[in-house]
Amino acid sequence: MNKTVAKKKKTDIVKEEDGVKHIDLSELSLTDLIGLQNALPAIIEQAKLTEKAALIEKMEALAAESGFKLSEVFNAKPNKKKRKQIGFVKAKYINPDNAEQTWTGRGRKPKWAAQFLKNGGTLKELLINPEN
Image 1: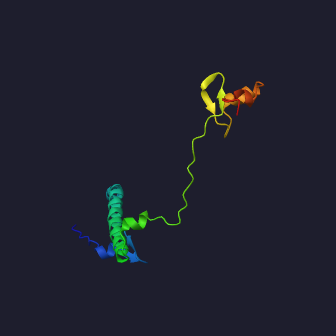
Image 2: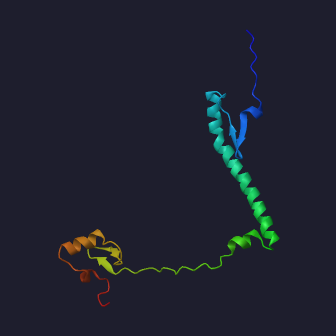
Image 3: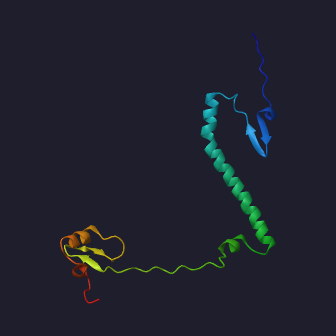
């Protein structure tokens, strides 16, 4: 028997609703679907790069209409509050058993300090500079 199978036209496979194209993949074999799935990440990445380049081009044109370069628009930071630089905090306490272990006195007590206090010691005894 000689059957002739009518191929679907591209217009039968791709339908557009609300500006979104819908592709009928029901006629593809499992092997074709898996191949398509494996190829999609690279295709998507290429589409992103293409759209990004087009967007940059449009944005450059828009900035040029106003007399700016795109770099000037994005590097301008008006009304941006500068954050105060947080400086280094000196250690205030030292482990009497290991001079390499210190603590600023901020945040959670280190285990060595907690153990020292549990054994009856005081934070004054752990001070690096007892005069202050």
